Amino acid sequence: MDDLEGMRRAVTLAAAARAVASPNPWVGAVIEAGDGRVFEGATAAPGGPHAEAAALAAAGEAARGATLWTTLEPCAHHGRTPPCADAIVAAGVRRVVVALSDPDPLVDGRGLARLGEAGVEVARGVGADVVGDQLAPYLKHRRTGRPWVVLKLAASLDGRTAAPDGTSQWLTGTEARSDAHRLRAESDAVIVGAGTVRTDDPSLTVRLSEGRDPLRVVLGRAPRQARVHPALELGGDLGEVLDDLGSRGVVQVLVEGGPTVAGEFCRAGLVDRYVVYLAPKLFGGDDGRPLFAGPGAATLADVVDGRIVSVARLGADVRIELAPSPATIPSPPMVGEALRSMEPA
Image 1 (cartoon, rainbow, N blue to C red):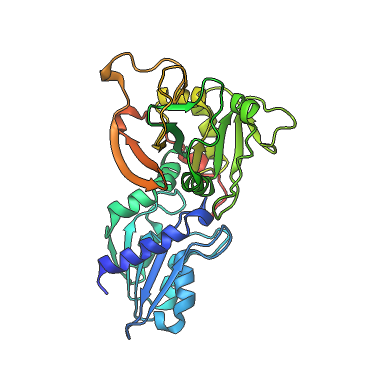
Image 2: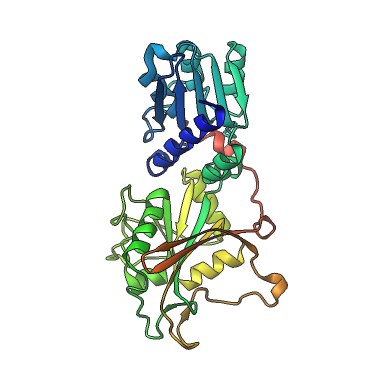
């Protein structure tokens, strides 16, 4: 197969590992032996084999003289698993095609250098744009120390999240709620405000999708008997909250808090992706509860600008994903030294 086909297959494998691999990167690897046989691997849960190691184990002796495609630079350090770069060299792989270098301070070019020093032919950059989007949460975390922030919102077509009396269940249908649970499963933590906990008493667990429950984070104090417990209760500046979570290995956080928390994250420019579920309902007035609470943009020049990443129909509802323009997202400080102290993969 050619490099584009090999990388496409690796990207598909990586997508399947999305909900299990974090805080490690979700990576896919494909090996084509000299006789045309193909072997595949994807990153397992932390402590399990990385994608390259899984593909090499599947290939066995067939890896000698083969080509390997991987979405991210192979690691070159001892963590909970041995270095993948050393395993590739030992297996006798002839050529390695890599989409992206790994910005983790423990890797950062060392894997590619190890391969080159051993005489392995290395090609890089194939599928870099696609893999950059796929691994965006991991790349941001390793470069800045902060998690990727996804703000999930659900509203009627006229932009209301609840009736004036507070009733909102169920605004969207089963398909949209299942997709929201998939987002939870892909996230290492979910954030909600204490006010939402008191009003709705959510459990914030994954029930309508496959995957593990995220760390539950409450901004403020949750009632002792709230279903959200056990939860991490944090307060103060939102940027500092994200720094705290990033230091705990949280790569992606899903913000599900009510309109007050949503408005605070939006105004602070801390959102990397907006995911909005629109239900085919109309409240028909201005007294329903809005998507955001608090002061908004005073003029059109101050609104959050961005691009529509995707639009999908989920049952009767529509899912819209918005990426805000980089100019509206402040860059947090680099925290490479803090990342170096994190437990390696």
